Image (cartoon, rainbow, N blue to C red; front, top):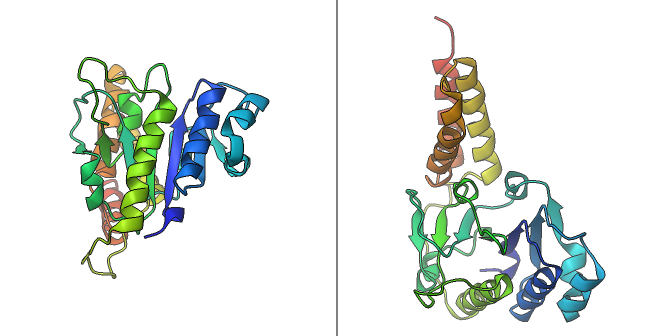
Length: 237
């Protein structure tokens, strides 16, 4: 298991201080891969650098993306943090349950903005949701605090525990990029077939379809089979 396999994504962070503190917290526990989606402050700026203290290198090497999908090209397992229950059929994992995650794969933790957290649309990209146990009457945690709690837990698992995974090495799990390409191919052809007849329902239908495909843990071979099936369905007789 490798610290380099672990990444952290801040989705639309609003405060420079939190961005800097997140980088500092990551470095406290040996992590270095940070991405930001559409940050509100100018990035980087002096306040971010100042609050990152000794983690300026993480800020310097971090990546900024315009949307979430583009940031997931090198992610195998996406874990979305959330302080509230989601009416979605997505696996939930606890802090303790992280011991069952295969950290030999590329694992990414996704954090929402300080004001609103993650929307259901963003959560639909995830393999798991994770809630940090806290006071049931006051679950709101500062962004940087949430990241530090998870970074410490993962660091402890990677440093001190070995997990035996027996899945065949011949089975290659599809990357988020491969799943995204297959899903976009599917949606393109559904659009051509006028599948989304009720336009008002189109966004939620796409969100649900994405959630289905992203949580299925598809292999590369299964992605190819599904793409062939979709292609076959649209062929004219």
